[in-house]
Image 1: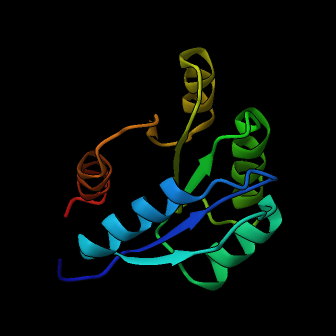
Image 2: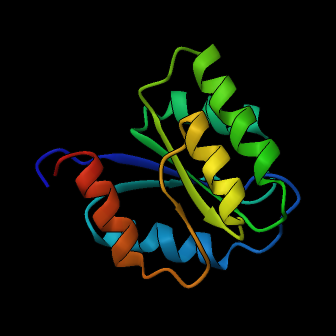
Amino acid sequence: MDKKLRILVAKPGLDGHDRGAKVVARALRDAGFEVIYTGLHQTPDMIVATAIQEDVNAVGLSILSGAHMTIFPNVMKLLKKKKAVDILLFGGGIIPDEDKKALYKLGVGKLFGPGTDTAEIVAYLKKYFKL
């Protein structure tokens, strides 16, 4: 990869389980991406502020708490408000198919479920950014 893309991996809300987010962050790093991991209990405001400050190309949210229909739209709204619509928002967690469809309509990128091979996430980002 000539240009290292910067990916922010974030754990929003009260969800305290971050093993999957750390596995994804490590896989992205190993694939040549520059990864910033926010740690637990981030608010949408904190996530967007960090994304802009760190000049990231994408934000990956890991949500297992069931708050995906609140958090993804809030992050999208804040990215638009801050004129950072060029930042890809993608993520993963336990998200029902009908909710995925609604989030895709809002402009959220690919959503990955539990057990997704990290190579699939890497391949998606490489294809998205034409690497």
